[in-house]
Length: 399
Image (spheres, helix red, strand yellow):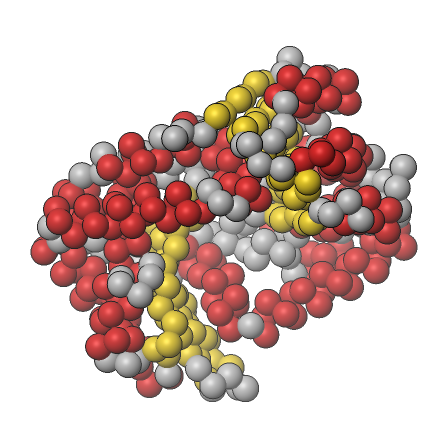
């Protein structure tokens, strides 16, 4: 059964979306169409810093009151910053929807950006930077982007010690006032809610101010880098290549190709690298497909001596797919992807995030018609994408 979707763009430009579900739970998210891709190299990390600060207090609530109003009513409160979006969300009993709307809308409208709290939260983000560096798997996922794109997209989303030290209250308020306006905002609810009431709430609580989002050119490249580090026992590597963007029907072929190659225990590379040759414990794949940039990647954790061997196996397996993939195997992978998507619908918070991403990417029909789009992928398009002509590669190895 297809989801019941309701969508409306208000006169002020704010987008309201509801996926109606007859369950006593709602996932609620407010988001802005702005993230790391909208930052210059000198201000890297400002979107993420603003996200942290919106939980630190508003004109109406301090940080403790924000968390307590959600959590004491049985909710879960969280947020995230990505390249194309920054979001604030909670998951609540549906009878407490009014609380969720009141708290989250207060956060995105009325933050105070207390200077003392800013200095404290800056230290928290410094610890987050250290944490990401100390986790080899996260570190290589961060660094592969610098092998795929020039600055500023190639720079770390979280920022650096240097950029974070330069972001003061004045710069933060300026960016907030530019971006956090109704025409850049979205409200998405998945669960038991009344769409007319969501529209009415938004019309009453958000004005007609217009905002703007900075844009920077995305410049693609391909680089191979190997970094040595003392104190790590395993080599962590990522093999990545540019893929078709949102709007190009071949982007679905890229998703299918990565599922075939490295998603699940039945994937080709999991079988080839782990099951057949015992070269790794973890083999996985993913895609980052947006309307502004797009790439696919394979992650493997292996020993230092096997890095080049694993890279060679990845390239060889792509070549095999480009030559011998047949309709039967492709149809099996299509069923796998459709099944995974159906299973993911169970988590309303995850679904809400997917809806936000698709809306920011400009085509929520991609999500609604997911099964139709996947079934329409042609064998020749998957095989053509498997002919890897250029790629990027990053490995962190024991040194």
